[in-house]
Length: 387
Ligand SMILES: *Cc1c(COP(=O)(O)O)cnc(C)c1O
Image (cartoon, rainbow, N blue to C red):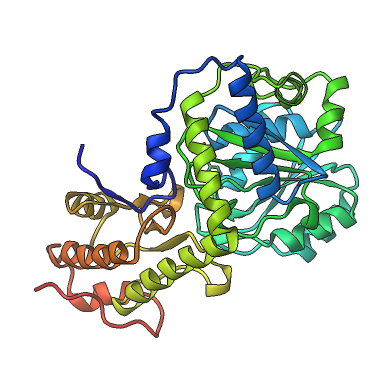
């Protein structure tokens, strides 16, 4: 297969040493060597999330959604009620996960791409004393919006409720500190901002809450965190066969992240995103959200006038670049470009040049002024012109 430049929000392009670690030795997961590796990775993840001394981590062989499901299904006791904060696809997914386990749900909805206001969440919690848990997506990847984790975590804690966070596309890059923010349950994955391989996810949760799972019937079987926690933390072995080589890769990826630091990675992704967004703005593309609301690792923008996503994707793919479709109602009007992984500034510049080519190669349908009208915002330069 030829190498392509991945501009999708995971799985990301990885460092050679991370990929090469996959070729480590065949190993039985019930041997002490694997137990030691599991313990090291769990501790490193807890530390990365700011939970050393207060939280513990359970690693799962699953995609990120598996960790979100395990967190939601395990956090909420049989008599619990969840308030789901929804401003995009992944917020809705957390609600669907809760509903799939028969958990009673109250919804706090704002339109996609609008911020969740912590004061409104506080008011809602005051009005709904039966709510025990709140779900929040940190980086809402469907719109590229970074939600206000510290502000919302504060009002949830002040109201005496428990917070479950989907940090799948933020941990490793955005600021995540479970102890400082007061996050009880947090789900993450290995193949987005951690720059590891797909196949592993994790839940970092308050240690006393993980211990309290012992006395309680779990929801589901493979997503029952009590079962995984007892196996991993007490017996020192995984409950089921894990993706052993992916653990090798994750350990290397975590070592690289420790060297770079989360702030360093955020700055690097931010530089890539600035380069991309400046280039897009110069070309008249409408980049979504206020700058302060944007995640460092992902950009959501309008499709160019007269060019559908399938055509755009195919043109870019033929030139070696993979962009990402938007979801649901945004599918026909927007697309996404990630600045995650080992992407370089040169690759961002070359992507912008490839984008110019694809736009220039598009046969124009309507009159030009109509196409330009679709380019929103008064500050935008003229739309790219066909040769
Ligand atoms: C990518 C993503 C997921 C889903 O991860 P999978 O590994 O595809 O299951 C969940 N939540 C958020 C916020 C994501 O960005």
